[in-house]
Image 1 (cartoon, rainbow, N blue to C red):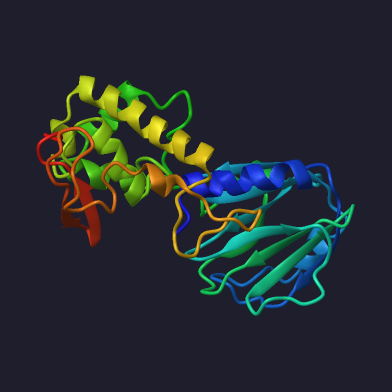
Image 2: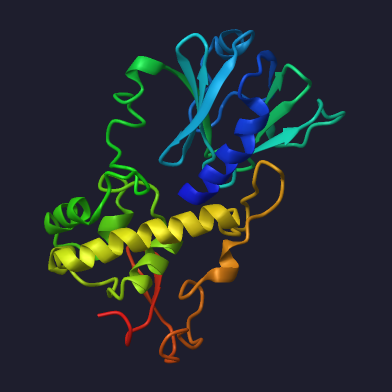
Length: 274
């Protein structure tokens, strides 16, 4: 599933080409995505100018000139790919095609149909059911060690589970949680409320560092993930622990171990992480 860095990479890929353009046509080839497209979807988008493109958690937000926002979630295997002109043929799972002034097309492709597209009022965005339960953004300046420490102190669950809980902190998926905990020298199974304030400060910085590095690298290369350019990301080349079970730790040379937590594989170094 595309995580925060992948979605931010997509946002950055779309913004220079779509911001300021006007939507001239919308082709819907399938309406029954994770949630059905609104009945007036095409009519609501036609003629609207895209003022800005932002991101909230794993959602791409296209802000329109009529105070509406097009919300896009890529689901498990979705992508938003730009084309300089309308293709002669569509792929099987090209579900929504948005044509803009200048000929640019944005194609929503989703083989598994776990993604979604919907519209919401700009002023009610924060209280929208998709966003009202979400925690803070890990890359925001306000997310610091003190804030994270307070969050961790409220739970006895494993620290990895807490930082992956979208109600506590958005966008820290399995890969990035493993990598950040390694950088912070914190064992993933440690109870969250056993993390000290000093360690929480280090962990907050590690989360930012890992996510920012992944964004610069274009996200992690997951099986189904592609950027808006159609290329795969390549952050996987920089993994310290994720997917490296039985390989030597880059710090102490002991073998990386793997355990299961909440159905996910957790990679860590038992010698470096306490």
